[in-house]
Image (cartoon, rainbow, N blue to C red):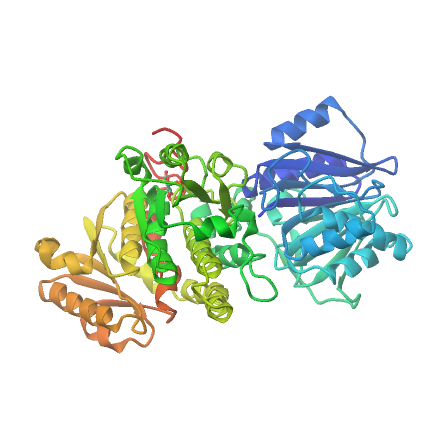
Length: 616
Ligand code: BG6
């Protein structure tokens, strides 16, 4: 999820673009770059690191801009955050520059075709193929950048927002989108493009949201929008009534609320580019050869916080699909308990930030013991992936809220992919079996969207419990780590005591805690899975209700068996057993967030916490 800006008009384009990038820096900040036309000549400047590095480079090497420019802050998906991989990318003749947000799934095929035609690539990114393709199409279309863009987009697969300028037409910025945000800012004698309105809201509040598969040709005094075949397109014009700060949050009051809402997109993006056309999984980016993975006899997952809970859920899936023993450990404990590791042990380090020192130390220890280490991480090029043998990146985009939400769900998706990939390379599942599960995963964004559209009762419930002193959480099977994650969210955000138990453990002690009116959240497993688990947890609900608990039950829609014992019933879509955490977690995130807001807490920056703890 990168930040993109385009401008054409009488103002100093470089200044307008860089200021716009500054408003988008929260979207991605591991490199930044700009391209302008200066006296008709295309000029680019790009730097790894924060936007400040780019500003310094521009100050050291000032240039004019002919009232036209594009810019980009990168959240790396393909290729480490280096100067060379930073956007914009240009063709070999330095005729056209392009910036890109998203993932081009068929870039490898396109790159191969371009190299066969003699193209020389300078970067590892998927984006660079677009620069070379645009250059070819500009020649085909006599310098018409709009036609060139439409022609290129018809060949691309995946999710992308593209913005380009070329020397062929110094007054024109062209952009295109598919499954990735792009909005036009209509000014007076000037026009803007951006990933979101935050970039240009200081200049204009009149916006046009582009639809799917559309191309916009922007001049200072005109905006032309077509589909990929050149036919005029219908668009939605609107007036932005957010202030600049709210605009960064997409109109939400807090980043966490925005990030909860982004979860369907984050899941879809994490699946992108990992399933080949024949349905097999292609995780070669993991850099762990199939023969290495076939030697694995044990898996140990190490992580902290929410990432640890993701690992607990991963264990159920990996052991069920791969029949490999899978231990899950809190990194800070693993590191110092002299664990038994060997070259046949695969250590999977799950870390959103890639910087948690507890997890990093566990990774170093594992490698000293000659174990293979696979990182599952959300920040491209961070320390833990760099010190691991292989990495599978989640594509949640930057998560600004300290409490993990969208990165947690994308960690689950990544863990499912690793489990399925292990089953694939070890021949434990046929292609059709894997494909069936991938198909179920591909439907999860819409299932999560359904939950997000029905959580108002959860918000109302949360506000009614603002004075509660404690909340207990119960679950079984994959629902138990979900209950743990729900309890952690409440601790992190509402500063309340909250505790999760395996529902089967209730009778061995925790049931003594049950008293009149005590809120207990129960995550009910799918009826389609191990139905015995479902029946047992219904008994657990009856047991605690009989002792006065206020039962808050999360169950599949249509599960009438729990209704008589539920003071509040929160229904979620019926999904396959092992994938249920993707939908069951969302109401718990909303519950904790809303209860915290009812208490007046800052959910983006909860007290005492940090987004990434880089000390042991
Ligand atoms: C905590 C964060 O500091 O670290 C949690 O507040 C996170 O949200 C935990 O789950 C682990 O962080 P990471 O980056 O290693 O996943």
